[in-house]
Length: 391
Ligand SMILES: Cc1cc2nc3c(=O)[nH]c(=O)nc-3n(C[C@H](O)[C@H](O)[C@H](O)COP(=O)(O)OP(=O)(O)OC[C@H]3O[C@@H](n4cnc5c(N)ncnc54)[C@H](O)[C@@H]3O)c2cc1C
Image 1: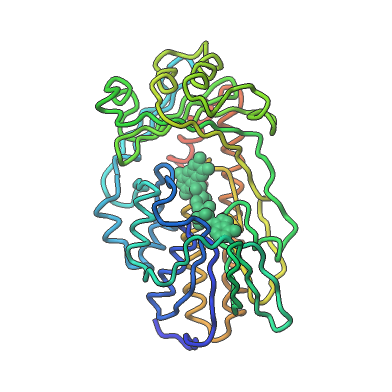
Image 2: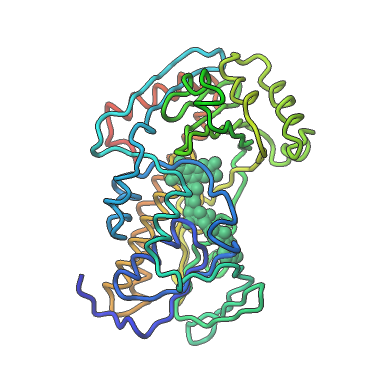
């Protein structure tokens, strides 16, 4: 792509090395722009990056194309991970979908594998691990001073908040804060399922399984490492995780109490909780207001969850973070004026992220409604027959 942008002038800082921040850095790097990425985690191996994601052709895969990683992704993508089974609490099967061929689908990749793919392609010198942003201070000249908890400071022409749900950059642009969605999830793991629990592995199949009922859910996904990640999910008050009395730091006792909360669910589903091992991770699910926008300000913008945090029920969060990254990077290299580039990105991002945020909210309500399994089956049939109504 030709560019009229003077690549040597602006200093661009990206705060956060999630899928959004890394994709942005990589696409800029491919066009000769050298950003700096500041990440709070001490190293690339310091944290388990979480479960499996499906990457969509129009967003996540499109961004990987812009990053030059599409072929590498295709070589490791798990198309069979698109399999989907849907049950109610009694173990009654509502859907049993098998992935089709290898074209045009939404194949799975583990978050850690995706991160490695991006990191391996990125100049390691551009990432500063162990740099947790404390504060960004706007200057009168439109630049920003960045202050980190380790004492480091930097002054940049553009700071991109890619720092996730509780972004420290977002308050520079909007007063909006994430609100609790009414859903709390407890993450468990069945390691090496095919070997350690073959019956459960066979029941789960190659992809995702949802069991829904009583405004609760057992959501499971086979990961690339052979483990099954399980989310016991509850419609609950915001403080429920603190007041429910389950000692999440004592896995055996927590599992016993979780099993009691699903005492009248089918044994095939309770097995996911019974057979889990290792740490248990409770988390609340938050969202930003659907359709959030802000008045453009020079020298600062947001991508990914920092811009449009939504529940996982549209399967779009990481995909949109990567699409934002591609749109912003290509806008930067295609405009002579940095702030016009950012403004053009923001307008475009608002238009495509709002429908996903609406879907995510609607799907969350549906998955925890009365007769949820039947309602979800009906919705998915509608989407199959009329794909144009999906976002
Ligand atoms: C249970 C669950 C399941 C999900 N499933 C899916 C799915 O199937 N498909 C999908 O597309 N999405 C899914 N998502 C959403 C997806 O995980 C997020 O939308 C995505 O990770 C957002 O990417 P990001 O780069 O914007 O932010 P993040 O991935 O949150 O990355 C932000 C980075 O910024 C760093 N950081 C934070 N604060 C600072 C600071 N002050 N200074 C420096 N660094 C900082 C963090 O350490 C982190 O590395 C799911 C989310 C959850 C909770």
